[in-house]
Every structure is written in C-alpha cells, then in structure tokens.
Image (cartoon, rainbow, N blue to C red):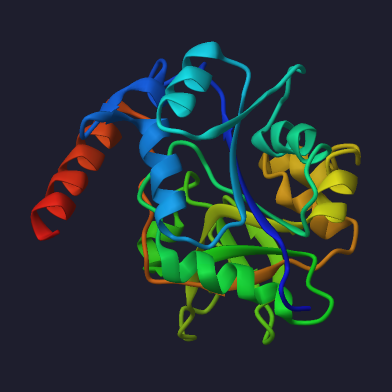
Length: 247
C-alpha cells in the first residue's frame, strides 16, 4: 500500500476539567490549538489538516491562520467519535488523530506512524516509548505490551507486564495517544458498542483489540507534552521558548 492519501484530524473540544478552555490559552503568541495545527502543518506529511470542533472560538482561531475547520453538529464522548463525524465527509485513505492539546509534534515519529500502513494488513497504528519500571506504576501512564512484530497485545493503566520474581529484565512501554487508522476501520470502530475491557480500563483502544483488530505500535524516543493542567501549560511555554532560541 503506497501513495496513500493521508489526512490529519484534530479533535478540539472547548470544555476541559482541569484547565478550563485550555485549547485557547496563549502559547508563545498563539493559542494552544493554533500551535498544534501549525506544528502538524510544519511536518509537511499530510494531504489535508482539519480541526474538528463544536466551538466557534476555536473555529475562528483556526480560520485566522488559514486553517480548515469542520464544525461538529453532534455531541461526542471521545475525540475518535468527533473525528469520525468529520471523516464521513472526507475522501482519504489514512486518518491520523492528533490531540489538540499536544502542540509539540515530532515529524519523524509521525512519518513512521504513517509508513506503518505500507505493511500489508495494517488497519490501525499508534505510538509508544520506553519508561522506567517506577513510572509504570502510575495509573495515569497507559502501558502497552507488544508481540515480536510490535502488535499490541494489551493496554492497561496497571503496570504490565507483572514481574513476579523480579529476576527478569523487562521493558515497559508507555502508550502515546496518537492514532492512525484506515478510514474504513475508524468508521466501523466508532459504531461498535463499548467493550467490557474498555469500560473497566477507560481505554477505547481495547474495543479494537476485543474485535480482533491488530494495532501496530511504533516506538519513539520523543516525549510529547499533553497540556492538561496549568503546570503543563507553563512547561509547554518553556519548551516553546527554548525551541525559538535554538531556531
């Protein structure tokens, strides 16, 4: 599978619990959502980049920098559901779901994520990076276990694998919430009912695994910053400041 048309869809919900209106907060002279859009555009990897939102302020900010917006007409539980609504109207092969609150994107990681679909049979791919065993104990860090072909076996908020005898050297992988799908799978997956494992772990990718679909994992050393709290926003501003000095 080559020469696939690839679209980046950025779900952008205005409401947020821990940091109100986080996507429209200032980040180095532009809003968080504007910086995420521009970061995706800078990679030059996508045939099309669309922000899917239900809020006029976010839409106006994206239009102000020449970006494309899809106004969601439906209420959604997840970003995947929001981009699926937008995807119905798009002629594309691969859809990359980029989180609106992760403006520091890595071109190499995204490129390898898209390249994963050149392997026959890949319908969905995502990203992971190594973490120390102590960090694996944090339930906010979603872990993934993979097979020898780097297909996901399971995702959990628990520390997996469990090192019973403490005598085996194990690698712990943290899941990064950037997904890429064949469009057909995205449209199917978002119509499937929530699975028991998904509801237990609160991880929607488990719905895909329970339906027998493999998720190809791409390893990276790039650690994205998700802006969920005021502290995260401060850290992101510092990172952007350092990047501007280096450039």
